[in-house]
Length: 339
Length: 290
Ligand SMILES: Cc1cc2nc3c(=O)[nH]c(=O)nc-3n(C[C@H](O)[C@H](O)[C@H](O)COP(=O)(O)OP(=O)(O)OC[C@H]3O[C@@H](n4cnc5c(N)ncnc54)[C@H](O)[C@@H]3O)c2cc1C
Ligand SMILES: Nc1ncnc2c1ncn2[C@@H]1O[C@H](COP(=O)(O)O)[C@@H](O)[C@H]1O
Image (cartoon, rainbow over all chains, first blue to last red; front, side, top):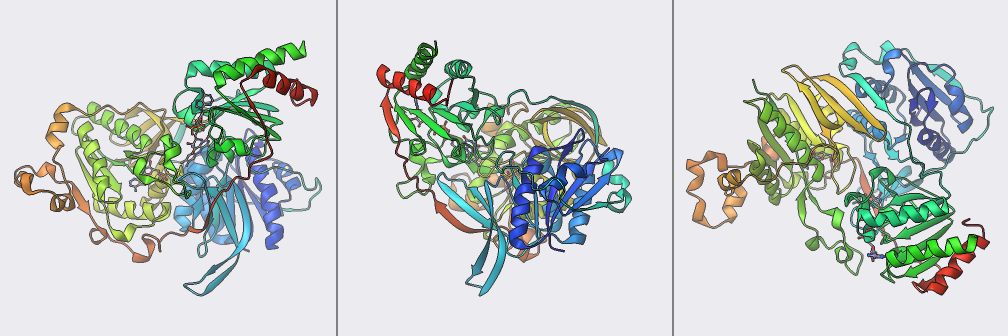
């Protein structure tokens, strides 16, 4: 009882990276809490699926396998979690801040009247003292995320309601295999105990999903542009530099909002988290929501007209000046020196 | 054969244009420079509703917003674009609500509003990007939800077919009514204010607003009932007090920390050719690039 649960997403028989990352994080939190880590997998054709999650340290794997449970629709998946969480009373439940997790999480939290924090950038265990009520809470989940208003980070807790729920974006936590022979218990659930016929009222008629075209997460160099790039036209300079260096192009949200680049390139708290060898920030001021997605880069170059831009504090190289002058020079001297 | 649509819309600080002057020297937000706007995706939601109204005569669109008194602006903005009426839910009892307490208050209000066919919300509000209120309201009302909608493909009295936009593709989904949809920014932009409607509704006010204003237009409200923006307080909905506001919010902020950046010992250069040449050489030699 009162274990830590991770809802795992499965697409075409493969468990999503974000779920494995959460299992890894969940394992380390469960160790601190001295509780068990339990994975929940809901879908169709899930034979042997437990083999993908057990190595990450899941003590219990709940599987519910039915042709009607894939592709994902809200009501049946929510019904499973609402009943399972009602029975098992987890202290913590984690899921990916993906289109699925962000559709499912609020539905489940609403039914269970439990708090949910979206897009956490860090999860920790700690105590809380409510001085007014004279109460001390032991071992709460600190759901840590940047909060609206710029350079602030908020520690959010759910003192009284369970489970303590949080979503985390892909790439924020690192996945790590614990033990390929980890011993765990597999629990096959019976679909009719959890889901009723009316839960299938919403039907998917057609589906066109593409494999992700760009792989910023895996790139060893990222050339990233912000609002300071100034236009879609100017972004071509960044693509050129990226091309020459074998890099991917990323962006800040301000650049995405301004229409300079596609949303799928957004880096930060509500975008992708990257940890490249080299991150080149061009015309990015470095608000906390952006930094959350890139501050673990091994080396950072900042190109900014403002010598005091906050991002410069993270940078190993600060180039003060206009990016439309500097980037062409970087391309030129890269080419000259690699000839 | 129209249907009844409720649009959930929120007034938010415009976090998209947070310039340098948005932060005060002490690290707090300078709200004065952040204009309060109609949450962008709620405008997409409104447009979706208005298109149904264009196609299905007899359809009504009601805007529901919860917020402080000045959020009545959201309802006026909706009326100028073609909404039929609006409700401002406002009360101190709602202060400090997290998404769960917000969705509780909104769903209890919707229960007072009578039968509806469709509820349309934005995917997420830009002040927190949580995207939780829509699904939480649907759950509390016991109806289905379809999130990330960008277009309505067909609609009749009992069912709706929509296209969803996901990160990596699209889905066509059919669902029975009543249903709650959340709408993405990939849906069509909202039409602009209509000049005639602007004239018609420019004096639309809530009771509180009227009390605070000069007497000039007071005579209008008896002869033109459509100028009354319906204001509701906690007294007009059935609610359990400890599910409201700060007390009704399971999530609490334990601590807020200003991030103080400790500058690294960075190499500083300018646009001068020599420096950039040296930098590129250095990066190539250390195998960071190349
Ligand atoms: C809930 C929430 C979630 C968010 N999530 C994210 C997220 O995931 N990712 C993200 O990036 N942001 C996110 N944001 C937005 C974030 O707060 C900032 O608004 C955003 O990162 C700013 O982008 P920017 O640095 O490109 O723009 P600005 O802050 O406008 O900075 C532009 C910079 O360009 C420089 N500049 C201008 N001209 C030039 C030139 N010619 N050459 C060189 N430099 C120049 C300027 O000096 C300035 O430093 C989020 C905000 C909220 C409220
Ligand atoms: N106070 C509110 N009043 C009306 N609608 C709201 C309110 N808060 C959130 N919503 C709706 O819920 C959506 C998601 O909000 P959020 O969960 O805060 O990201 C918004 O786009 C609105 O449609």
